[in-house]
Length: 285
Image 1 (cartoon, rainbow, N blue to C red):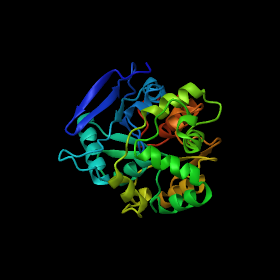
Image 2 (image 1 turned 60 degrees about the horizontal axis):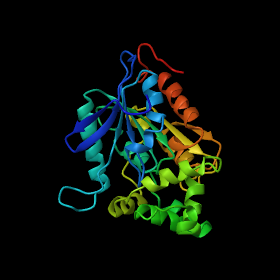
Image 3 (image 1 turned 90 degrees about the horizontal axis):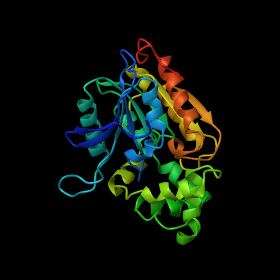
């Protein structure tokens, strides 16, 4: 079941939906929130389906980069998109947020329908300013590649077609052993990100620690991630009083990388151990 079973309309857009063949009784839904320049498609290579196979109702939201008036979306607009998806699900949900989607998940932790969050290489509460400065200083080629990704310029026939910055971006997002054709297919699907949302994400964020809200949080980092470095994720975990797990490898786009199954299974195991999240009959691989 790699592909979604249906489309879930929301008041502000749509989400892709995977219905489990054997629903786990009492389980909340899982709402997947993609990162900058991404989309719901990022969860469709198997990650969402694996969660659904474990008995969870899974929805992957497409964030809208522009508002109805044509203006670029803000983080508040993205939060409104996510709230509309939560309302459409009509049940409590665990948020699974990647990168910028991880920041969005943190901003939504106080929502009544939210039961907790799994944060995959999330933008930290301190904002991106320090990570961005560090990236520009230590790896200007990659910083240029990230800028090209955010403005929709990450397409092309090959990394050489857009130069060294494109190759640096490919190396930062995916393991070097991921087939080149697969990596290029993913890179071509990246889209222009809202400059407003990216700018807002640079600043320290108005967040409450998950521990104060009584929400369980899992933070997942890559040891070699150059976009959201592991030390940044560990600070995020400490802020929330949360568990943190470090996976080997450089690939920031972990739901598309070689070990996506390991990460999905780790998330499932963690969720099954949380009293507020575990269904009556947790179906963990």
